Length: 226
Image (tube, rainbow, N blue to C red; front, side, top):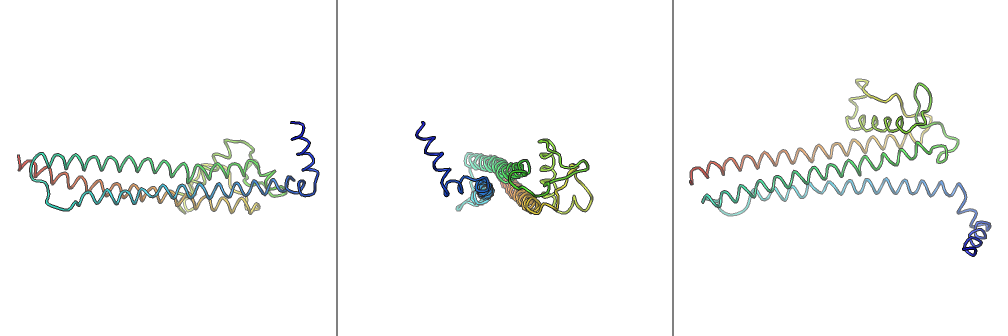
């Protein structure tokens, strides 16, 4: 253990060691990690949207080649298959929507919270990233409320700005260009995630209506066949 400690101290005392372990270098590493984390979260969130392709495949089940079932037993099996397909698609939609929220909004929220909370170390000499009537609130609840408000504004586009809607007494500080730019990206990400979730549920709703229509037609055929 003493050899490891002595080796580490010798490394830090060298010119290269002092450069790569300096506070400035640590800040660079932290920003690289934050950037990679954001890209990773967005990429994973995009992956969740593949449910759309899966739902197209389930829609094809409604248009199987061949003749429609005629016998009561065949009709019952077809109705059960359609119900199972619809229920499976709905369950997948809710899981993917939850994944989108966690990865597309929750992950970037954690990263932006880290930047705001640690701004004195990450951005020395910069203005406070957010400000309110009483100045910068160095409290976890205040920052979380600020982030939730940004998601709300990003999800609804310009509507909150036009009608003056919002529930946080804080705003991003334009004097801090770095965090203000990140807040703009954060809002845009929240908007894209919201649109993706709405589009996902719209496809599920449309497919469910088609399933109900086909099931109703099969039920009428079942009554005639009986």
